[in-house]
Image (cartoon, rainbow, N blue to C red):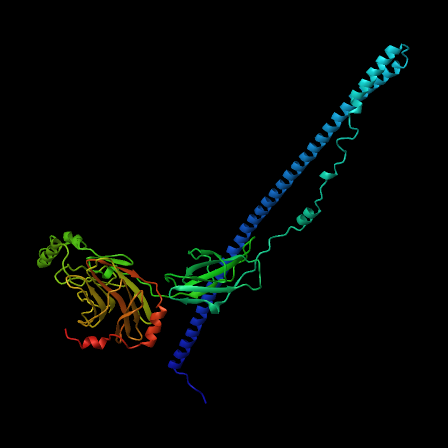
Length: 520
């Protein structure tokens, strides 16, 4: 019985084969990239072997030259000592010899005189001669000289025995280098923008004096790559086998770590590097979305009442297109700093590739990165004397005239220090007053999947307000500022205290429904 294969079945088989081939191609491409990186690492190591070998040979020659110099200096010094001792003894003996020679000559003369005196026949002359001989004998140098040499001919006290030194020299070896440490990956911890790394020595080594830890940020997992532009940062003189880096900004997906042990003489080899994940939510202000009266930098935004004056020249001469709009612009620029309710700002076309700028009374700027899923956290700090500001999230399709908290697609807390102070949570044009002091820094926590938006005192982690909703699409961080400025801190993990609170207290605090039921 024959089975006919339909075109649909053929197509399915073709798609399956194509998908399998695509997987093979992806695997091969990944393997090729891995091999390229490995070859680059080997080339880097080969170059390092050449450079480091030349360096240690140069160091070795320098050490031996220093040793030879020390030996030459010692030889010269000891030779001089021998010569000085030779000169001293020679001088002493030569002086004794001269004195003895003189004494001998005097004694021989006196002996000859005494011998002749024996032949004197005259008694008086003989007595006189005998007396002279007696006096001369008493004073004769020969009887006053010591007959013991003042120096000996031995020089044994200047002999040397270099047997121990020779043995030391014969025992010259390369320095004992500590072995490479090993990371205890299971004990390493990444939490609250701090990283704790733990390592151990493969064998007990009592001569270890300290450790050197090096780290750098990376956007790929696995071994550090040679072409990675980021340099290693160094923490020296670590006396234990663990270390914690605190206050980090996690603006990369990973961090590489390596460590080496040092004794008093030398530093050992690096450990195998370990890579730890350091993901966090990083974003900045999106200049293409900002109101023209806002001066935007990557991590700060400030109110600028002069920001729209640059459009005057573009508006002049177009009387047939929006003369009332031009009058509005002039009134705004003359008044200096309009209030949030009364100000008017001309519309401006969005930059190519961006969304429309916020305009009118919406002094708003969005973040440049959307939240599609997961839990994220960032912090905001108002500049001193900021009169009015808001922070929260919004759908990206938020209208350019919309104001934070006044539509059903925006959620925020609002601080007003102008005329009458207030602190409130806002959504869908409803507000709930918050009976807590406004902190210097506010933490914003967004759990898109869980439908939570919470605000915290960034220092004490006190909950200020919580929205509980169901987000129907991705959101972006959103900010409003008037007469002041905001500073943004990103690259932060969700603090462990907030993560624990969210797990334990899910559903408590202010909610979206409570705002919906409040009067306008």
